Length: 346
Image (tube, rainbow, N blue to C red; front, side, top):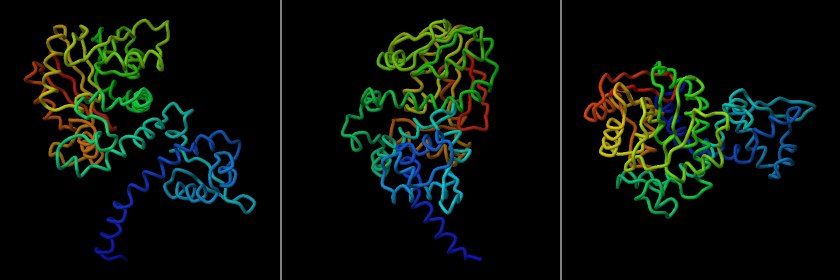
């Protein structure tokens, strides 16, 4: 039996090596390991994987064996050779053909978020996002910093599609939204959540409101079927331009990007545009009442520090933003997933 001191040292080692675990996942996704094994008619040995991917045989075997330890792959011996196949986790969430694949978000985290986190200490020092240090681009305009190129914008929007493929259903089912016939998804990006909303509530119409560049990208890369007339796009800056009139405004992963002052400004604008009896649905990862958990949400809040000007909040903190903006009857529903829902009425 290990001593408390030994157990503490093992825990420290796990934390210290945590970035290595992330990089194993990032590399395996970038190289296409999980897609290759999914498409192969039978489990493959490391030499075959290396040949298909054009990678170093030694490096490939090391990567595959580490993926086994991380429960991303399974291994068995066949004819004296170790052969690999996907686990249920990787088959569900890391194979591109899966409807729940999170591969685009994994790549976004690897190529953007990870680099910003390399400057976490500086973010804590100055309280600012780290795009300037990570990429050498101005960080004063958050939209410009986040969407540094067309490719970056497409990857981020695909990543959010990944997120809503898993989390969209639970947050839209947290409340009965059938009474809201006209819905506006503010900052709705590709329209991924709007599509799920329209599918769940067939009597509603949904407008996706986002910046001109995002709307253009959405129409080019994430087209809505022509026969689907209940979903439309509207261009504008939600801080300055007129908002589409609606019964319900959805703010999904929007408020956590911004300071309290900017959130209050946006919520006040929404309240003024909202039809009588309407409301706002806030979808965010909620902190515990004391702000010290869950760990994933705390990490998300630090991520808002290094990538935006915002933070994650507790239900009480969201209520404190909603009430002065003119919203009442604030209800909070935990979904059991990464994202929860808050519904407030005008």
